Amino acid sequence: MNNPEPGSPRSGANGRRVALVVILIAFVASATTAMLAFTASHRARTADATAQAADIADLRAVLAEWQAQVTEAQRAGHDEAPQRLGLLKSRAAVLTAWKPRTPCGEQAREQLHVAMDARIRRIDGALAGKPTGLDRVDEQASLDGALRQCEVEPGRDVNI
Image (cartoon, rainbow, N blue to C red; front, top):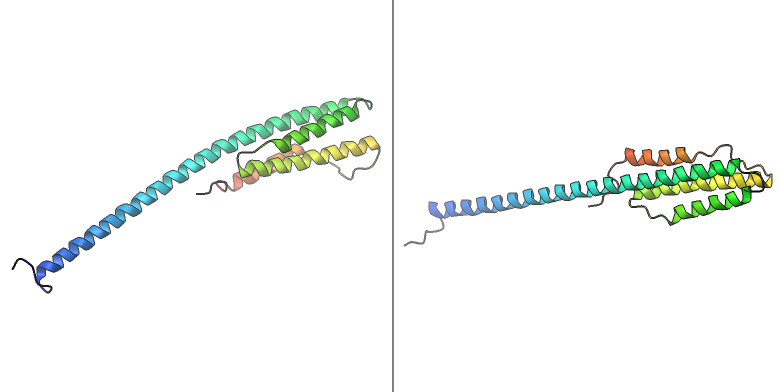
């Protein structure tokens, strides 16, 4: 007699309780998942911002050193120019060995390297007395353009 019949009002109340418990568990699970995803996303964005700032600092330091070496090469006499050109080539090679921390750092490194190579070709052509076909090389603008692109697309380095 303690067992209610399937059509009795008591069995419907138990079914509703079970349904409410299942809904509550599903809500707690989805809220927990959302909170974990938000936390992971925040951590990833913070780590990316830190890594990107370090990449930018490294690239700006490389560019400053490069610009100083270019200025020295331009001031050098014709006899010293090949040696200075060799220093510029080795400096450009060092940049290719540098490992960026972010895809934006990698993109900026590649664009800066292209501009540095263009400068080397221009100087080499000028030493050989050939027209270079390159009117102006601006490594600073190349790097700034790449970094601007990174600012336009924030968070694209983050994969969760």
